[in-house]
Length: 287
Ligand SMILES: NC(=O)c1ccc[n+]([C@@H]2O[C@H](COP(=O)([O-])OP(=O)(O)OC[C@H]3O[C@@H](n4cnc5c(N)ncnc54)[C@H](OP(=O)(O)O)[C@@H]3O)[C@@H](O)[C@H]2O)c1
Image 1 (cartoon, rainbow, N blue to C red):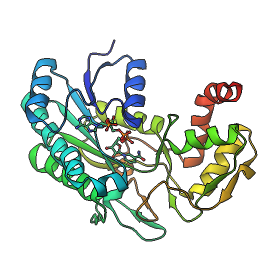
Image 2 (image 1 turned 135 degrees about the vertical axis):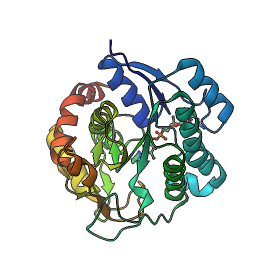
Image 3 (image 1 turned 120 degrees about the vertical axis):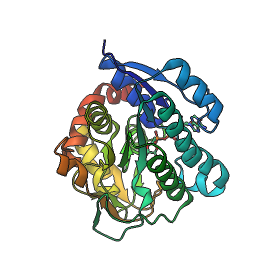
Image 4 (image 1 turned 180 degrees about the horizontal axis):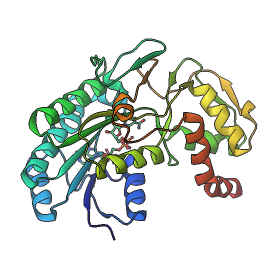
């Protein structure tokens, strides 16, 4: 068993669930919490931190839906901004390393732009603004932090683009996918790996961590089906509801400069991810 005690907030979420499994499989001592330790409530957060004394805090708690954040602005700022501030305060109190997960939605980019960590963010959505404000609180309050921005996370749980795609295709449905939305799809597994490397290293600060290269959702969906052995023609060009604020990609400049980790291409990442979940795909077929 690894000595590090790691508190993962938002542990029931898409990233949180995968991160808890990944770290547990790699024999870390994981302390997962979700709504039962409300990140918006400073006293609750302090109490948990002081009683459990984690060495590392990975804050995955968030409100992430773009339209949900627009409709519930106060809640979005409470969780994404005040919650991040509270995690900085508790990390400071117990001297834990703080890893904050953030997003490319802090930017509003144009086609084909590659945005590194030193580009000025200009969020246009409540989600992006509240996440950026959370980053800023952490930077102001506690230097022993790592902020990781990623993009287009996919995993194998309901509500994930890839999961929903396979479910529909297994049921012989055609799926409309946008040719207009471009980004760098990144599997939760790849993000877990880079989180682990940064957690164990001596680097601090802001890191972009997305897969290399870019594609449209349409291209991504067709490639996923091909790799899994389905006809890509289940995917047709059209509209889909997975929101995104602009067509641009994150440049992983800090990872490259520090030479601490190389993110895979989105194609290699997807192939590797589908290999890992192949058993689940077969189960879907048997249902
Ligand atoms: N998904 C993506 O494509 C993507 C891309 C880039 C970056 N990110 C970042 O990755 C991180 C994790 O995202 P995700 O996709 O895993 O989000 P998610 O699935 O929405 O998970 C967030 C978790 O936080 C919980 N939570 C909400 N309010 C809380 C509170 N007050 N106290 C404690 N827990 C609370 C949520 O519970 P409820 O479900 O009950 O609300 C949920 O379990 C976020 O910081 C996000 O900005 C995500």
